[in-house]
Image 1 (cartoon, helix red, strand yellow):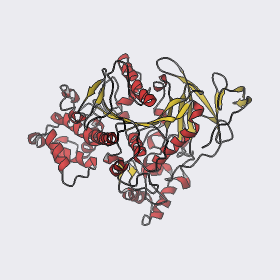
Image 2 (image 1 turned 120 degrees about the vertical axis):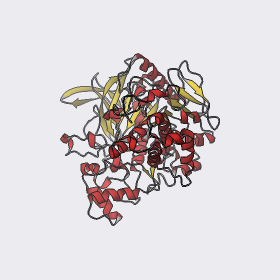
Image 3 (image 1 turned 90 degrees about the vertical axis):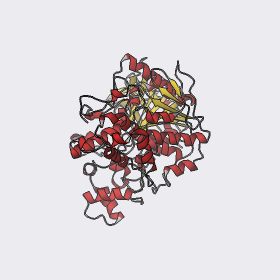
Image 4 (image 1 turned 135 degrees about the vertical axis):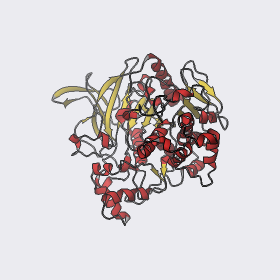
Length: 556
């Protein structure tokens, strides 16, 4: 592991301006109020900038788009990340780096750039000479989008931590695999591991403690985080704790046991010869970035089971059973986490048949089960869920609106909540502190519909998937009520990163799992304790305000 070497006072010229550079500790080079330089030994100088915290206006030093690996393009496409070559000139880290490519973020002005040169990260700190706990964030995005710039630091840095937000490959460029050396699989998980190794080497220069790293992942990022916990490929000592928001590696949507089938499908759309694996890999490595992305807009991606690198040599549940490492974790879901799944299914069926009255609720549910990719040869899970949430009269009728709360509970349970709780329960049995929460607060803002709007849906998103992040990252202008929730969230997340125990003023003492079902805690205007997480599987159906989930003026 490379360590820092002290630098002497020197004069550096940036943008034709002479600046006196002073060593203030390790390799941090403070200049004036506008320009900040830092030396990464073995890499080069980076130039940072400043921002401020949201509530107390503390100064935050930020270094944006810092490369941690070479561009995974050309011969490196689909392969594991490799160490970045040093740079000679001062590298500008005052602007976000290249996002990992997705069609809706590629500008015509950058088509001639290396669009795949996206393995960079952002570091935010308030004190270079401290030794503070590190929050290392892994974004979600369904394995096909996401970026560091969507996760600003202005709430989290109210507390005495260092924040790192990494990027990793997404979509076809990240997840396509032939399970051979040419396209090994799971390179994005290795991107995240590589970024964590970068943190181990360099975070002390930013005032961070490499022995106090907490990985925080949301949605797809939570599944990657879960894989880091149970993968035999994860080096010892990369991190100490983990937070997994609204995602579990045990969810069927998180993994792909037949990645070659998907890769062949893409090859057949783009290439003339897809008979041999070597030909598939050669063609897909040569296809230009935009063409590859355009050909895969209708496909979904996930982690590869039995990849060449050994990141996931077995099914996740088997790796979990074999796991002997202890990482304290905090994990949970939003109250109506599956409403995004319901929206996606609704859009697909509505687009295909035009009128939802043409299918019965039973037929609609069958498609929802199909979307989950559950392996249920006996039909037991399907039959039990159907019996618990519906009656025969409703299933064979045409009143979909009446069943909206049940639909939301089913989607939430199958796709998010049940896999999360199963993962947590397994870890807790090994005496690892395992905290579970339900995020129940419904504020002014919602991610329902994301950037596409939600007015056409006959249901509300409720406490929607990723709504919790609104209060962790400063992406929205919060009203006073929402700000109080944000402060609670920041307390909970950072106290766990600092001490391993989530806490916030005026809340009861929060305890890890102690039984098969609890305790767990509710995050709302008042923090409260629950003792049977299985109640969350029927939370919409049992809610006395469940009618608020239904939009009376929009037809199903």
